[in-house]
Length: 473
Image (tube, rainbow, N blue to C red; front, top):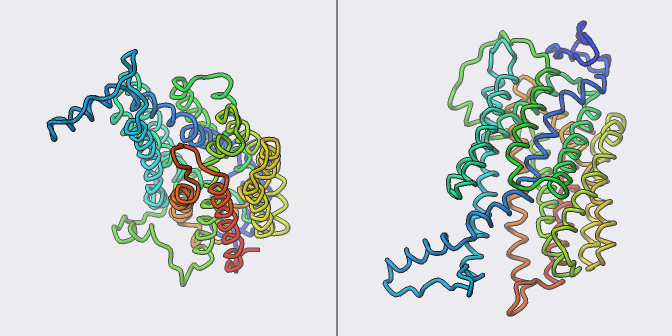
């Protein structure tokens, strides 16, 4: 057990790191001002990740890859190989026509962009391994967070420069650098809370983290939906990353670690694995989280559903509105749910979350009206907010080692990547197989119903697998 630190409070925000052996039941609760400050980076991280995938990259893929020059390049290659390729089709105004090949290339390049952003998250366990062994005088986490922020800002500015010159492939490389930097900072940020927060107050801290994340996403959708253009995203990303990481690093008054541990390649490779026999609870948290994110990944088809089933006149607008409703509802319930989990346990919150998500997807399967979809968006936000409020706390409850918290949380972070990637990979082909309409680019209500029931199945699996976690309530 840990002993409470005699230097817990040193000001309105300062909250010093826990001693290695703390008595969690007697530790003073962290003040809300400290929790808001140390979780400031969650605001910027969610703003960047949410708006990048839903707003910025789809727009930029169209801008840089859906043009006549791109099609002409493909045509010239084909002509040089076959010597009889037909000329690219053009409209009377000389612009490229909307042929399937061009649209396919645009969609493929968007997929490449999204895949590249996801792959960068695999750096998290390695960053955690290095962070856990840092002996910097500025602490174990803050120097690496600052480096990640610099890399992210450099990548973001390079993305803007490549956009201006329409250098599509250079843009993708810059995108990878930007998101890699963000994920480096996030891997160290997630390890700060176990360093500072007593486990019996982790639910409240996790709730604040979820609230800041939801607010970041909400503000991002509002800003890009009603104020800024996509081209303004890059400077905004830099500003938010610098400001929020500065606040987080200022709040986290780390002390230099005196313990020195050598870097070993075998240990680094083990950082990407989980010892199921010894740390079964952490393994089941990983699997449960993967299934949950597979479930919420079904929302990726929301815009298409609004277009094809609800016949929305502006599906992009309603998609943004639905996202904002969900994020706001999640932000409202996050802190109360997190605090409640400190008393009742984490599992009840996850069970309720999965129940709400199952109800939402069951409703979507019935092809409701737009007003009903928006109402279900509120329930979706409440369920997702309940899950996110305890998601981090549940992982911290069963960490294999507090000494190697960053390494373990890096592995935990990969579960979201796996779930968000595998979910659409299964749902997309099912929608195409059972929802395709001949001579149409739309899909049938039956196809979307199958995808929605798949979401129900995923969250049901998440709820069922939660029972195998024995070391947490």
